[in-house]
Structure formats: C-alpha cells, structure tokens
Length: 398
Image (cartoon, rainbow, N blue to C red; front, top):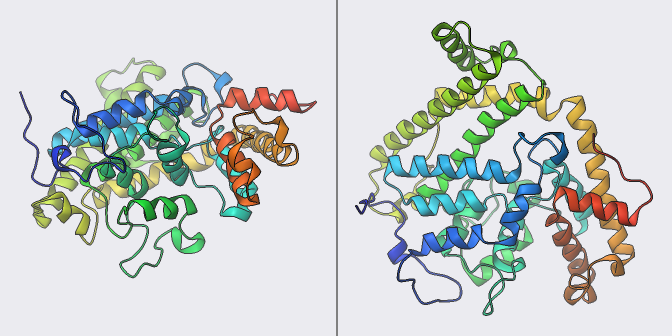
C-alpha cells in the first residue's frame, strides 16, 4: 500500500535535485537513495567505533555514535510516519547527522576546535557537510555522496536558520560566524540559510534530543554514575518510576531502568507528535515551502515537555557529562588528539601517503584543515593506535 503524504511533506519526486544531476532510479526515491548512500559510506561505518560518552573499551553495552544514530533514525521515522511526512528524508537526516563527529565525542570536538582556531575552528555540523560533499570518495563521477538538496539543507539547518533575512548570522552563529565549509558549499548550491528546514529535518532534530535523553539515562545507570532514586529529582521521571514500581513491586532495578527509559521515549514522542500537529494545524501549510517560510519551527516539544527536556539535561550534565571519571578520561582524549594534530603539522610525512598529498602542498590554512579532516575521520581506536606509533607514552583512557 502506498502511503499518502501530507501536502507539506517533502516531495522526493519533485525535489530540487542533486548538485550533479543523475538519472532517476527505477526502484527507489531520491531520498531512499540518499539513505542507502549514507549507510554504505565509510564515515557511517566508522561511527561504530566512535565515542558517544564512554570510550570503546569501557563496556560492550554502552552507546557508540552508531548505536545512537540508529536509535535516532528509528525515532525520526516514527515521528515522520505519525505526522504524514517523508520517512526516508527524516531517516537519512538521522543517519547522517553525526558523520562529522571526531573520535572521543565532544572532547574530540573541543580539541580540534582549539587546534584549528586560526582557520575558523571546528564545527561537527560543518564537518558533516564536508564528509558528504567532499571527503567521501566512492563514486567515479564526483567526490562526496551527491545527496539531494533537501538532505543537505536538513543537515546544515536542522537546528533552524543560520542567518536572518538580512544576511546576518543568528543564534549561536552570532559570536563565531558561519563555518567556512558551509559558506563555500552554499556558493555552489544555495541552501537558503535564512529559512527553516523541512518538517522532516525538524522532527529528525527532535529525535536526536529524545534519543540523547533516553540513552544517556540508560548508560548513566549502567555505569553507576547515578541511581534510579536519584532520577526522582525530575518530576516526570519520578512519576514514571513510581508507576513502574506500583505495577511490579518486586521488579529488579535493571529491568525497572529499562522500563523507565522505554516510557520516557514514549512520552517524548507522543508530546512531539501532539505539539507539532497543533502547530501545523495553526499554520495550515499547503506545501513544504510554507514550512520553510514560517516565522517559527513547526516541530517542537510542548512548553511543559520542553521544561522536562531541560530538567533531564540539567540532571545529566553534572552527574554524567561532568562526572570526574568522564572528565578525566575526556581530558586525556583531548590531549591525544592535540598531540596528533601538532605532530602532523610539524611532520607531514607521518600522515598516510594519500593524506599528505593535494592540499598539504598548498596554503597553510588548507594544510591545517586537511589534518583536521584526517583526525576527525579517525575512530577512537585508530587515534590511540596512531598516538602509540608516534609517541612514547599514550594514556590508557581508563
């Protein structure tokens, strides 16, 4: 059965196409082809060995960038299906949203941002765009994956417009400006940085938030960084946990934790569906263009659930992301990447041959950015292997 999409859903059959035109597929929509290209990319496979919060050897059951990505994709498809949106577009945006993350999670991003400060710093969203438009080398006719305009737009603008209609940066871009990689690509293919992205991109971004909240609670419990009773500080979590325990008084803590996480996901998803449907009803869009031209996002949590989202993040921040054990390991991880970066700057011959060619022989900014590209593409394990090869002492990150 062919599902009828809402009139404001992105239309794969009448989209804005690819930078380099290609013949259509007889069996797949353009957005489905985008999904498949991301899944088969080298950068996607590397996500299996990149840190989410805990480094790779701390346990087989903690999330990696890949398992996080798959959870985001599942939630994004659920949201898109409920709202009559194109599921494939929401899925590809979920699958690709973390391709630009370096090893060791946000610690790696902080390290590369400092190393690259002279050439504009490091931004994982901009790096994702570089991966899918330039750094992947799989096709005979072009670099990158040659994804559709709608997919590239959603990757760049999933958190909303980057500039106002006057062309000035907005939000977090006011302070540092827009990353050069985005500006360079935007000159080739205008991604309309002033507008909101598609509804599919907006729900994919919310799916990322939902997945983060749920699996970080799960991983934090598994790592003994906090307990179920500690979670009672957040009203919604207290209510859910109370319900779980009333239904099964003898439930063991591990099972109660899984049940809590499952119900948190359900609550957040249902809230997004309800709030987004309400906003769509008020806006009454008749096309995806109406979604982009709106003065505010259509995809959102309700006011009450946005407060819950903040409360969960405020709970997790000191107990998980800033926990002394996590901070110590991530500090060592930052040092590993900084060591590698400056070693490659001083000794370009230490880079693999295919990375020491091309822009390495060009201007200084190009050389620094290419080193950043190489390090950003590393997995946690490869970064440690390289550090061991080049330095006498490498931290164990334990």
